[in-house]
Length: 188
Image (tube, rainbow, N blue to C red; front, side):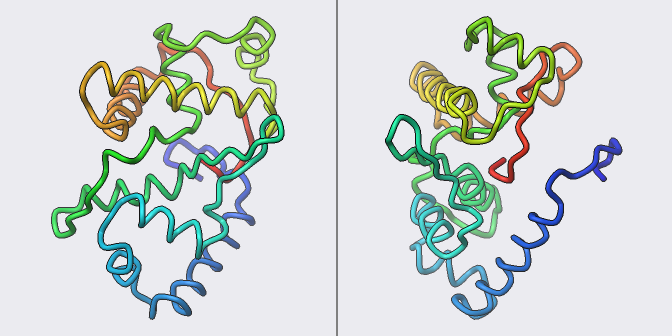
């Protein structure tokens, strides 16, 4: 459970991912994540690519209208979080996108940056489940990333910084916001 007694969704799958990550870390990186960072030359996009390549549970890829769509939210956020550590110098953070999850579109919608079609808005507002990989879920996530890119451009900031700012604002104003979309997934 979380600090507010919310049950962790898909717990067995997440546990399996942790076990897989431990095995791969032992096999491919001599049980030291620093070896992955060194192999990536401390580059955030390369760290993300190596995580996706070696740890299949981070491969946040799906198909939308016969085209492959890659979000890689968890792999990118790992690289970004490493950049926040003072003892590690991670480069090319500006090449990461917004981290497409559920909190950011909720916040962007609350403040009118995103607007849902009436049928989708009704589903979200009534806490109906949005299927992972569905057109609705992919469009919410893709619109969130694109909105983040536009905001980053307008504010002359890095998309990951926009992500952090929106996420922290969302945590502080949670009671004022519209509901977030409900999707059972390990991608966020």
